[in-house]
Length: 231
Image (tube, rainbow, N blue to C red; front, side, top):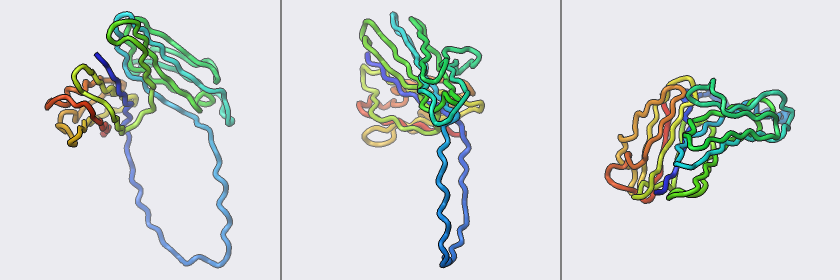
């Protein structure tokens, strides 16, 4: 049985629309001074969220956090990987820019994780998981990148066909609740638009949704999934 994974790190955000009033006047004959050159400021803070990894018998998972060598004048900071549901439980750390922090889990599920990098560790910081399954129907390697939180995401090319278990993993990395709407689209458009609406995630909570439960009319060999977080 083939198992596929889609992940979304949900952030609850308030979107503000700014409305401005512009007044147009005839330009003067004098030449305006050229605008100052934009300054480039290095990234100071980066966050990534990793989905839950459900281990099969005999499998192992390695989660790697990488921070490239410091550049651009950034200094100080740190990079840590902790459990999303309990941030007091550390899982990994990058000791210095240019190095990699790795932790492994054998025959044990890996909970949802959140990775934070600041200062010199932030530019180019990335985290990913690699699961090795040595035998059985799922034999092979499966990689899952950890992603920056977002309020909206499309996933294309997934399937709910027989013999495939496709899961959508949701996680709320912020300190306010999130309400998530999940919509599945097939060849003929939206499929049962109410089935995935109103999924509530408390702060630090994660949830796995089997996509076939959102397509009660039958399996889809090709589907797109639209996910939106709202307050």
